[in-house]
Each structure stands twice: as structure tokens, then as C-alpha cells.
Length: 616
Image (cartoon, rainbow, N blue to C red; front, side, top):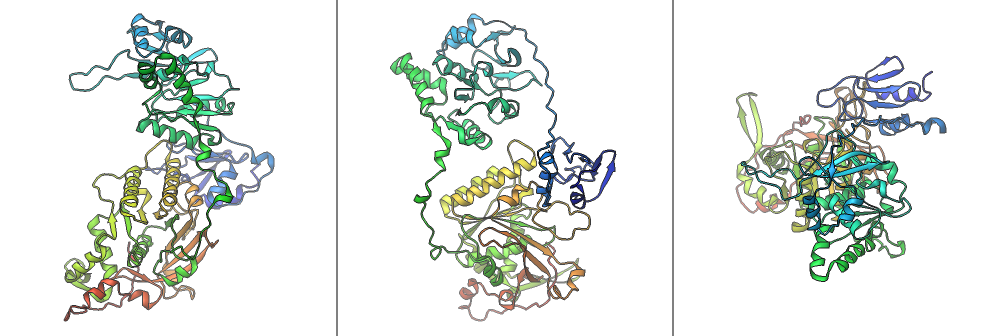
């Protein structure tokens, strides 16, 4: 018997086949088959509605309700089927080989230099391997399931000038938290970065301390320990006071239940350094008390972002200056762009989304709004030529005879370059690198320009051309990027335009919609505005509604004014690359023309009236 809601999903799967008890889509709707276009990896159980993708880098799982939400299909299920969940089978780990001896005298002396006593080492079952390396034994229900090894000295430098590794683990063993078996769920849980720091907390009488098993960017332990951690009403995170430690804290805040989180702030690198340095000045007992006080004074996370509504300052909308798009019909519909907004632009290849966006950039600059652009597809020279064409308009272009196309091609006129550059000067900046850009590089540059230059308009074109760092699959990393960009927009009261390509259209689909954006539905859910740009097909141009137009802009979502699925029609001048809704927009003269008008005898160039579709 087939699931009663499955018929609603089928039209959105594109090509699919039915095999036994499964419906298998040609391409997974989440990863679209990945780089190699893997086929039929995405299956839906006909009876339960549970789905999963077998591609390791995707691995999406869920039920018809979650799939419907992603695809924009309303799935109404009974209580029984709504809560039916498909989960990936847990990874099978191997048990470590425990070949240990009692802790050696050398290792005891090593820990004593760090002010950690033999009693603490015995309590934590520290042992030594055959090569005298320290063994941190991770217990779960009385059984060792993970071992971390550490050399009891400073790493040696080999002949190549490389340091030997300080720590390592057995491969394919289950990563859990060090010290879990000794914790009481009725008391706060303290999660610290390293095993020696966990020993320091034990030495200082801090109960319920655990440490993470691997590096600060490896959160595989979180899934393994999630159910166990749910028992605790309070979690205290203590990361090292360095870049990696702060990154660990921020990731923990994002992924854990922040309502019960507290963060330890410490001026020293870690707990062990705190104990050692304070003991030198004040003695060991006062140092231990200092460690305990750091735990007691941990800062609740929620106090950082919760405020009393009565204390919120009201906006005076008469004082808020919107950033004009330069298009009268669009501005009257959405009121221009506002600081703090994340605007998603989408459209199929060749639809003209980058071109309409560069038109809007120029219109914003004309109104005095400085802009920073990451253009991942166009080299900076090509980007500038495109902007030159739009800024000039057909009236101030020149041309050359193209020997390949055998025709006269308009190009920017060099006699106006000084005026165009003066228009750009200190008003528009590009992210400039020959390397493959990462999201962290781009956001770091954006923060610099917002702080140092006061830039308030940012364009990221596009999401697919950057290397999104961090843990998780592509969907998870893209969702985190959206959160970062939205937080950036609010923090700096800036407008962030993000170009996001759509996934491959479903069978028979000719237009993008807000659910077409490639990746997770969080991308459009989190955005303040979602705007699509569609290049009209030859068939559409023959209809009375679209005759004489080239493109249609669809406002899929506008959180400020509650606008959904409103359309604006555009014409296009192929040679000047300008989109327009009326002749004033087509023939607009930017301020550089006024500066140039003082020069007598400047020819007005030739005027081109041909209008064609945008190829970009």
C-alpha cells in the first residue's frame, strides 16, 4: 500500500523509477547527483515515506513531511505518520587494542610539572604504552572504546624540519567525551578542550569535567554523545584562549542547546596554564580556587542576546534612508533596499541575474551608496568592462569591427575612461584574489570594508564559486553561510545581495521558484527577500502578457512588506547591457556625464536602438 501523500511529491522529483518498495529519483533533489551526476541514489519508501540519499557526501534522510517542506509541497499527515522518522544507521566502530602498562615514572613526572598529582592520574586511569607514551583511556559503561595517545615531552624536530606529532588515536574507534563514565547528570557538565585540562579540573575539585577527543573542528563526538548530553540541565564550555579554541566555542554554541549553555572566559591560554601561572605567584591552593572561580563565573549565553522589549528603541522610519534600486516600479513595490537585509537572487544560467544586479549596483552608487563586490565568475577586467557598458549607455559607446563575428561591436569609449574611473573611485571595491576564495576570506574582507571604509552594500556573486569551509555536507555548510551573512547584515546595518544558483529544473519546469535554490530550504527561509530573474522563452514572448519584453523579475518573498510572487517586466538593451522598464531608465545619464559636459566638442558617439536578450 502506497503512502497516501506520496502522489503530491512525485511531480517534483523529475524523472524517477519504481523499484520494489521504493521510488528512486534519477537525481537526488538535495545534491542533484553531486559532481559526477550519480543516478538513482535517492529513494523513498512507498509505505512509510522515509527517504535517504546513498551518496556519502549528501546522506540526506527524513520523511515525507520534511521532504515536502523542502520542495514547497504541503504534506498533511496523521500524528502516527508525522512522527515516523527514518534515521541513518549508526556507524560501526571497532574496539581499540588495549596494550597498556601502569603509568610510568617518567609520565608521572611529566604531569607533576603541570601540577597534576598521581592521585588524579590514578582516578582517571591513565596508562602507558610500550613506547612510554601516555594513554588517555575513554570509558563508556566501564569499557574502553577510545584511546588517545600523547608523547610525554616536547615534540622532536626531524631532518626535514617538521615536528613529530604530539597526539594520535586509533583509527575507526568511536569518538566520545573523555570522562563520561564519572559524570553525574544531576550536576552541570563542563566540556573542556584537552585531556590535560580535564585532569586539571579534577585536580582542582571541579566535578563533571569531560574533554573532547579530537581537534576543535571535529564534532563527530557530538552525534555519539547527544543522547547522553541531553540528561544535563546545564553545559559549561571552556575552550582554549586562541583562534582554534574560540572557533570551538562558537561552533558549540551554534550546535548545542544554547539556552542551557555557559562559556568560560579566561585570560590564559587554557586551564593548565592558568593553574601553573597563578600557582607561581600565589601558591597552589589559591591557583586551584582561581580555576574553580572561572567555572563559577561562567557566562550564560542567552544573556548576550535577550533583552527586555520595553527597553528596545523604536525605529523612526522617517529617518531610515532606503537604498534605491534605480527602477521606479521595483522601488514602489519593495521600497528600495534596507540595512540589515539579506537578499537572495536566483535564476537559471543566462537569465541575466548578475546583469540586473550590476545595474542596481550602479544606481546605488549614483545615490551615494558605496559597494563591495565578490564576483566569482568574471575576472576583474571583464567585470569592469561590463560595468563600463552599463555606466556609459548606448549614447556614449564606440565600436570596433570584429574579424570573427564579421560585424561592428560596441565597446566602452576610451575617451571617457577618466570620467568612468572617477565615478568608481572610492565607491566600488572588488574582492581580488587569484586563489580559490573561501567563505571565511570573503566575510573577513567584508568585515574589513564595513569597519574601515563604512561600506553598506555587499554583493556575493555567487555561492557556488566559493569554497565553503567547516564541517557537514554541502547543505549544512551553505545553511551556516546564510546564517553568517544574515548576522553580518544585521551587525553592520548593511544590505547583502547573494546570488544563489537554482538546482536542475524538474521535468517540465521552465521557471525558477523560491524552492528552486540549490541546497537546503534554509537558504530562502532565512533570507529577508528572495528575488528571481527569468529570461522569457520564445513561446512566452508570443503571449499578450509578455509581448515586447525580455525578462520577468519575480519577488518570491519580501519579509518587510509581505509581498509574495509579484512580477515586474523588463526590456533589455543588448549593447549597453541595461535592463529597463521605461525610456528614462534606458537612457539614464549618470553623474559622470555632468562632469564631462563642461568639455566642449565631445562627440556623443553613436546611438544603438537594437534590443536583444542578455547572453549572461
